[in-house]
Structures are given as C-alpha cells and as structure tokens.
Amino acid sequence: MRLSLLALFTICCLNHSAGQQPISSLQRFLASPPINGAHAGVLILDSESKDTILRYQSEKYFIPASNVKLFTLYAGLKLIGDSIPGIRYRENADSVWLFPTGDPTLMNKRFSSGRVMDYLRKAGKSIWICDENIFQTTSLAPGWSVDDLDQAFMPERSALPLSGNIFSFTAGSSPYFKNYPDYPFPIHLKPGMTLQTKRDMHLNEFYLTKETDDPKNLYDSAPFISSLELSAKILERELNKTVSIVSSRNFREDLPMKTLYSEKSDSVFRLMMHESDNFLAEQVLLMASMTRFGYMDEKKIIESLIKNELQSIPQPPKWVDGSGLSRYNLFSPEDMVYILQKNIDDYGRGRILNILPSGGKGTLSGYYESENAYLHGKTGSLSNNSCLTGIIQTKTNRRLAFSIMVNNHPGKSAPVRRCIESLLNEIRKGY
Image 1: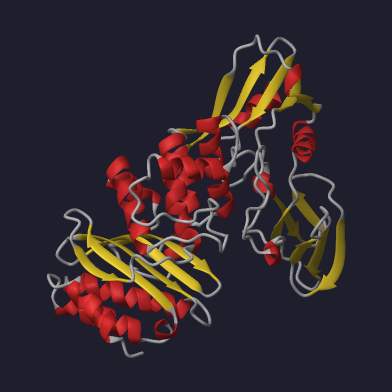
Image 2 (image 1 turned 90 degrees about the horizontal axis):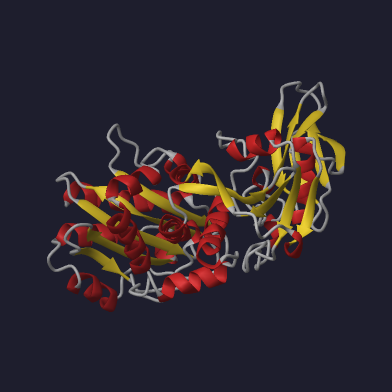
C-alpha cells in the first residue's frame, strides 16, 4: 500500500517530536499485508507524560470487539465493590426469600468459594425466589450473531445465572455421558467421530455427537435458554429441596435485607479479561446497573456512565453490550486509550496490570512472550476485526499506552496480530 500524501502529512505533523523511527515503523505496518487492505487506527502515547508517540486515524470509529471489556471493567470497578454480591435475601425462622443480583459465579466450576450454595444447602428453610422484575433487558444483546447461539462463548444473560448458563457434557465409555448442571434436558445422540454439542435454536434440546472408538472422556458444552423458572428448577435439583418463585408483592418487607457475597471482584474481573469471557462481562455490566439503579439494564448504565464518569471521552461511542460480541459497538483508538488510562489513574497501575493478561498469558498466549512481562493488554477479535489496547514498557523503561484497531481485514486474525506485535516491538526497542 502506498500511503497518501495526506496520510503521511498527518503522521509526520503529529509526531514531529518522536523522531523518524516510530514513523518508519508505522509506515511499514500500514503497508504490510493484510493491513494494507484494511481500515486501521493507531494511538501510542506516553502513559505518564501523555505525550503522543504515534497517531494515525486515532479519532476514527472502529468495531472494537472485546476491547469493550475495558469499559465494562471500569463499570465493575466503579460500582460493584471489592466482592461480588451473590444474593440479597430476607429470612425468618422457616423461609428464605432470594433476590437475584446477576452474580455469574453461582454453581460456576471456575470459581471455588461456593459460599452462597453452601448457605442454601444448610438452610433448613423453604426457599423462595422473588420475581421483582429487575431484569429489564433481553437475554441476547443487539447485534449478536444468530449463528453463535449454540456456541459456548455466547451464553445468555440473566438475573439468576447458574453454571454460567452453560450445559456441559463429559462423554466416555461408562457412563455414556454425564452432564452439568444435573438437569434432564432432552438429549439426542447420534454417531460421529468427535464430541460436538448443538442446541435447538428455540428449545433446550441438545444434539450430542460422541466419539465411538475412543473410551477416553471428552468434553463439550453449549448455552441453554435461560429463565428464572429454569433457574429455580436447577436449584431445586442441586439443593434437593423445594425452590419456588414468588411475586414481589408476597414477601416479608418487614424483614431486613441482607447480602451474601460470593467471590472477590478482582478474581472475576481477572478471568473476564484473561479469557475474554463474554458471559462474565455481560453479567458484570448488569451487576453495575443493579448497584446504581436497583434493576438490570445495560442501556441505562451505559448512558449513565457516558453522561457522568466518562463524559470527557474523546469521541462519544456507540456502546451496546458488555462483552463486545455486538458489531453495533463503535469506539475510536482514542476512546480505548482514554478508558485504559482512566482505569489506571482511578484504581492504580498495579491493580489494573494484575487484572489484564501479560504477554504469553490468556488471550495473549503465543504473543509478546518474555521472561519479564513487558506488555499487558486486552485483545479484541471478531471475524475480520482485530484490536489490541494496553501498556507496553520500552527498553528505556518508559510505559506507553496504546490502542491499535484493525477492521475489515480479509482472512484470519493471526497475520494481523503478528503485524501489530511487530509494530509494538519495534517501538519498544527504539523508543
């Protein structure tokens, strides 16, 4: 790709203090395939002095994919507190009334505390789930792909999620399969060479293909269609006691409201960022809404954050979900560096870098590998879109905040990610 005179003029004018090496690195990046056929934006600045190192189309809008989770992280840090509220509840001598909080860790095997489930198991009381109409959104966000409804990376959002709203299968020779949670969803078995789970688009019916020649256990999972009624039934089987739903008009308002916390918030945030977990991100945003408004509505909490805490954002974004699964999201590289810096400024560099994956870890596995972690960042990937926002430490121990967003590239993401890696490593060595 031959850069236009206007593009070169823009690069040079905005980087007159950076020297020729960063400019040359950027030119090579923009001219290399597959970047040269794509829409790219770059912003790199000194994290402490805020001096700009490189800027190219940094004010333009891009589909950010999971870079949106940096905004969701801010919402969680700002509003949720140090620990995740597992349940709110009222109780008397013979009953417990549960009020859902959106906690994504309940019956979730990736989290270990089990504090809420232990309390419910030991409580020798009737359990009532209060339907307060607090879930004032939809289970699927606008712009999510219908092709991914049965994919494990796209569970539904809900007020009382259990097991991550995922139905998991472990298949082997004996028994033929086990599932979690232990709920009798209809399962249709068919022969095949690999374990693969599909779900009916409109029903909680699963189609399982099990390997027939290998007795070794295999694992797969798929989202189930969530509802408060289904959560009650799953809890009933898990706790081996009756769990009922009650209208908000029929619980004891004279009893004090209590909160039972489940996990430390940072353990949820860290997994959300390291694995780019979409479900955790969606529930974190809903929990932030619950904290501020008393109900779950991602539109309201997004609107509130942009109007108040994030009012100085460089370009007003189109922000529609917590995970970045939606292609309706639009943010600029300047927006991404802004939210990264705000997280660091408000909550401390050490805490944020501990939450973000470093080179060779999580979604950065295979990239930026070094004995001494020099890069921490958040990836963002959708078909034909690849982004990375983070902090890189240079050879002269300067910390640079950056966001590189590439949209509309053909083919797979790996070549684009390698081009981004090359650009950042050149800047790290030469600046």
